[in-house]
Structure formats: structure tokens, C-alpha cells
Length: 187
Image (cartoon, rainbow, N blue to C red; front, side):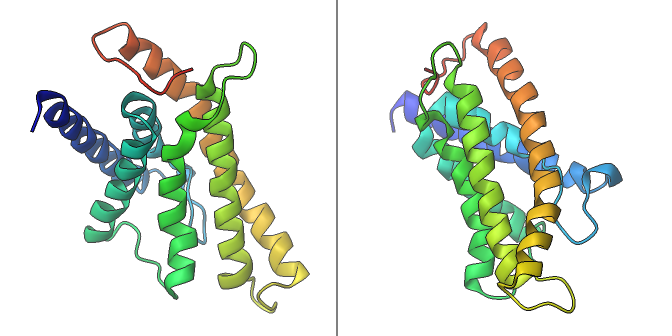
């Protein structure tokens, strides 16, 4: 292995570890938790940073690594069927990695556009899961009530996660960028 490959693997392991630690800590902060699952997820921060630091492919791997280690430790085990699991876990953690693919819009850095679009896609994924696999009691999957419930329930914690990421991710990237860390995904 080349030095850069070993360094990238080390960074990836570090980002996965940080995501796991933040995910675990977040479970003990009641204001971050929603009553029926979902949370203001501060663990997305190292995954976003990894995707801008190492590129989108390694960012997706970091997101999936975060899921895999969390799965082993029981952090994300609400399972009904494979499609629900993909919509609730695999797709949302993978989507974060695509953030650096988004363009810069005039003077707005792709950090902001990436966080907003990736967070929106995560929201869409969780809404679809809620509509078809977690409808409210007394309603049918795919019904108008299921759509309304899923949209409103998933909006608040996904929106709050996006706001936290919009504030913290650029701040940390700016701090790290002043050091020896080079970010290849920033436009």
C-alpha cells in the first residue's frame, strides 16, 4: 500500500469512530431523541467532513462503515424488512457521502449546497420509510394520513440535523483547512 492509501484508511477509521462515538453519545441526550425513533443526528458531522476531505467515494464508505459498526453494536437495529432497512439506514448514511459532488452556486460553497441536498435526500428516504413501513396507528401504509404523519414527524429532526450540520461542518472544515489537512471535495 502507498503512504496516501494508508493515511486515507486511517482517516476513514477515525471518521467512522467519531461518528460512532457521537451516535452513542447522542442516544443519552434526551432533547436529541424523537419519541418513535429518529433523532437530531450529530454523527453526520464526521461523515460530511470525511466526504469533503477524502472525496465522495470514501465518504460513502465512511457512511456505510458508520452503519456497519453501529449495526454490530446495536445502534440501528429497527428491522421490519430489507426495503425498510435500506430506506431507514443504508441509503441515508450513504447519501451523505455524495455531498461534495454538488456544485458551488455563485459565491455559495458546495459545502452548504452538499449539506442541504444530502440532508434533503435523507429526509425523503426517511419519509418514504415512514409512509410505507411506519404509518400511524389506525391508518394504512401509503394513505394520506401516513404521508402527513411521516412528513411532519421526519421533518423536525431532519431539519434540525441539517441546521446543525450547516453550522458545524463548514466551521470545522475551516479550522482543519488551516492545518495540514487538505480537502479535495471543496469547490
